[in-house]
Length: 432
Ligand code: ADP
Image 1 (cartoon, rainbow, N blue to C red):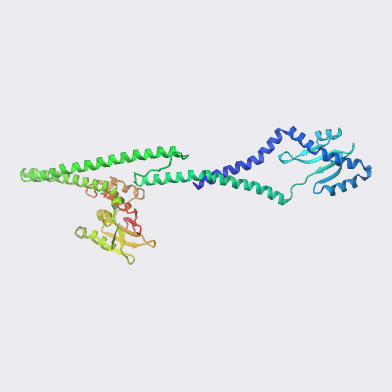
Image 2 (cartoon, rainbow, N blue to C red; image 1 turned 120 degrees about the vertical axis):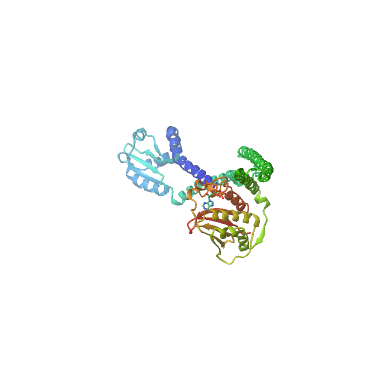
């Protein structure tokens, strides 16, 4: 916004300076005859007085008269000049030859030099020298003050636009972060009232669509769970009744049904996480205990697969206020992925940063994530090609759920390259 103000002000100042330079000359040029006539009228009286002073004295004394007048008229200059040395243009020469005085006009159409004939060979020149420095400074001071006054007016005009545009920006940001009920509340009388109105209508439409989709997803997921449970139960009951040759096939079917059930559960948690911020708890917990309890649920699998794991705490960790359920959910997903994709080791690190934030990293020595995919893997259902094989992965919802769980607490979840060779997921939770 400041940029707009500065640019607008610069444009105005440059236009103003350009206009000051060009317009007076253009006007004086266009109305030259009128300005000449006006200045000739203005100088007529003084000129005839000066000329009379010369004519009252004999010709030999004219230099002395000129000196006397120069003293009286200072700082204006009075000079006695020979006609042929006066560098006259045709128009001036013609006027002087007819016994008339001539003027030379300068800036803003005011006269600078007045020439009057004394006889056929001599003329008297009255010249205004340039303004002294202090007067020049004062004139520029006036221009600067006009510029400052224009800036003041501009600020007065821009301020309400600034305030309303900032409000629009904040609302757009909140909407982007999922706070769908946010509106600009900019009154219609504002200069951007119409734009804000359209924006609010769009926000309302978006909120309605998102809610409809969420409700549909929830309803479908809930509705799917009951028949899936029945199907699972029914298939298991059939086990003893089918011939031995069909049992393998039946168990495969049970596996598919359970996978589907798992997907529905994941979908439900993903859509619930959308409200993570509203429903979050604030509990003071020991981070080490939290991480230990998450790892505890994987201990058997980790040991069974011979994976080496370590929890490292980089400084003395005081207790930290967070939502234990959401945080544990995120860490669980990260540890599960690290287990899936590591070669043989995974490492969890905990650190309290200088600003009181907590940094928790989960890293492994596996294949890692290519730099260009690092943002995309947090999108729901996004899976890297190499993990399409169901045996290495889930549904592509784990990281999306983890990110929502952390962002719901005002934190961030990002991924980088680990020094171990694989991926390093970084959870950063703010203090308080
Ligand atoms: P999934 O349930 O398929 O693992 P996620 O959302 O948890 O879904 O992960 C998305 C994708 O990110 C995975 O398919 C996988 O390719 C990649 N990924 C996640 N964690 C790791 C990791 N530790 N190392 C390498 N790739 C990973």
